[in-house]
Length: 258
Image (cartoon, rainbow, N blue to C red; front, side, top):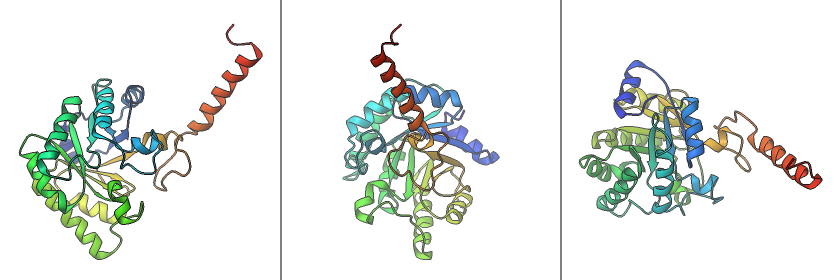
């Protein structure tokens, strides 16, 4: 397990890959810990996979605080990361600090902030005030309406160069981890080798220091089409549907309860 950021730094130096999964409740958190995951991401993706929204923009800081608390109290070994939701940090570094304080007090050990160069000042402000930050570049779901959908980023030489520049600036500002989403694998690997901090990939190829996926994608519970980069390790939707149908049938034919 890699509960501390120093353990993540050591894993990068030693070339050991780390695994992260999203978790939104205590049951999922305990199961993920038992499976040996290194970190849990309490993501604002809960708005989509739990709340059925089309994007993450309606998730509130109150919701993130609640889900962070119930995940954090359920585990003792994985690192717990929480997302700053849309609207809780963009106005000013001071606003971001107030939001981070709530998530850290709820049990998060590091807070994730979406955005590249525009977030450098905020990351520096937070880092100087004892807030561990994971920067998030590439596809940033909170910007989905601005970029016109969930589209891969960094595909042109200019865009790739900008992402590398953003990554370096965020590290200089004090970011402890960097998450890269939906960017070319070659670019993610290059950024990983050029940065002193651990990187996390989602849809960014095998060259990052760690990988994260959404729990519901891994378990085959995602309604509709899961992202192309996600891997389904079981057909959870079918298994659960069959079990519930068996329960319904037994109630109706009187074989349950015995």
